[in-house]
Length: 421
Image (cartoon, rainbow, N blue to C red; front, side):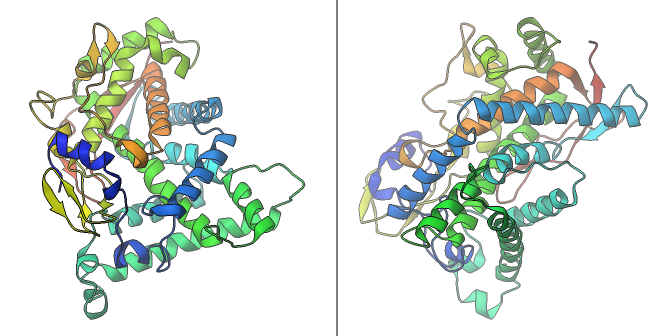
């Protein structure tokens, strides 16, 4: 466990500790092989990550198209909230917020990956959300009991978590392989690729399963993108709105900036971001609150090396303790308070050197651009149209969190009130 700021930076830039863990836990999730891009290293990781980023860009990732997808989902989200309010009394509605954003965030990624968007009521979306809930309940990046003691997967498969782990992964493999089969059946090499799956299928049709390319690798990459591309955003937003309900002054400041810069007649866009430092600071503060309650994706020593003066043997798993940095009282005074101002200096965004929630160097999270885009667009669009108040006669959202593969805001609801147009 790497706790200090200096040691974490040294670790993240040390190429000797740039691997990902091996073992039953990390390989069972991908058919006993090392597949995907989240928990792999070496040439497979380099080639597949390069392919993933290059082709996702064709479908909007990191470009204007990504913002267009986010704004489209934000429009659907606003429409759905107005419908909920209309079905109530037309003036207000109590909405469960801690998991409200999941569908829309998932759609921003799945549109690029598979060319599909779901309505919240869509049966396939309900299946997918159930799968992802079970997946994150079954997964812990540090590993579970059977990953540290593999014999337990045979001796006590239920108690060790192995049985649930396998059952959950079989369900999500089935879901993804069924989508892959649909893509293969309608794939036409004479037509342009519609999404990332099409682009990958084109390579498989042309070259076959060679080198690092295979159907299993494609399914593993989709699973990784669910984990890396949706979880940070949805959990960060759940923390964000739990604090916005508690901290009405923060919410009002954000709305005042939105009204001043954007007005009420058009949607916010990323072009507005340079002129909306307070709302941009909210993005960083909600990411800090999420990542400050978790660990980084584990690294592995590729060879004998040293870290902070300590000998690190080959194959040692090394973890960044983000809590020790992002919730440190000296680096972030009053760390459990929600203070966007900590990321502002003279009215402009100012990110301190000890703020790197998406990592550093080669294994920096490639989903950070998507996460920051989604959080900014979703937050500002929702705050432009609605106010989120404490529910009368109910406690304020808890400052505690729920542990899991990644931390979640404790369940909470908000009284949602449309703002005057």
